[in-house]
Length: 138
Image 1 (cartoon, one colour):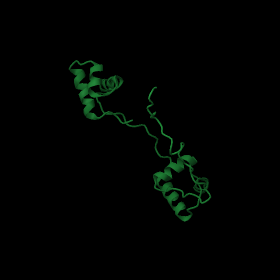
Image 2 (image 1 turned 180 degrees about the vertical axis):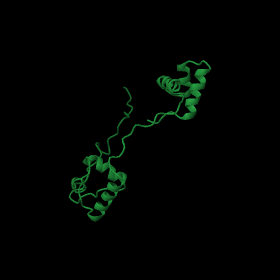
Image 3 (image 1 turned 30 degrees about the vertical axis):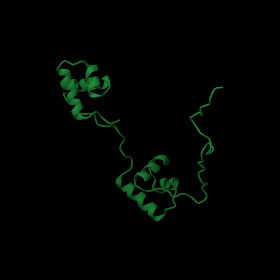
Image 4 (image 1 turned 90 degrees about the vertical axis):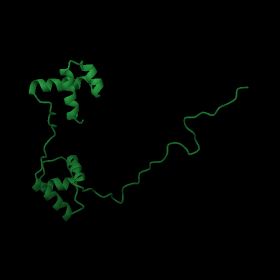
């Protein structure tokens, strides 16, 4: 979720300093009352209304390892994820490596023996859905 913009944060603090109620501020700015309370608490405790940094995980792979992955794939484009992890002794799970490769613009091609996807319509083309025909009562 994106943090509340800096200008909205400034409006919240200024409105509270004027004596506005939290519910009115939240409605006016378009945020939840709990967000207003959180911003006011942050301003009170740190004297700043800057959003907290996003606590995302840092990459477990180094730039050198990423380069080795690219090189290994360019040498053998049929290498599997398991083989890649084993060959380069990577400290990463197969699912995370897959996401990483997609992020690097590398993907695996489909095999010729993969069955086609049979996504057909659930109803026949002549069946009408939703609307009922009008009938005359006799």
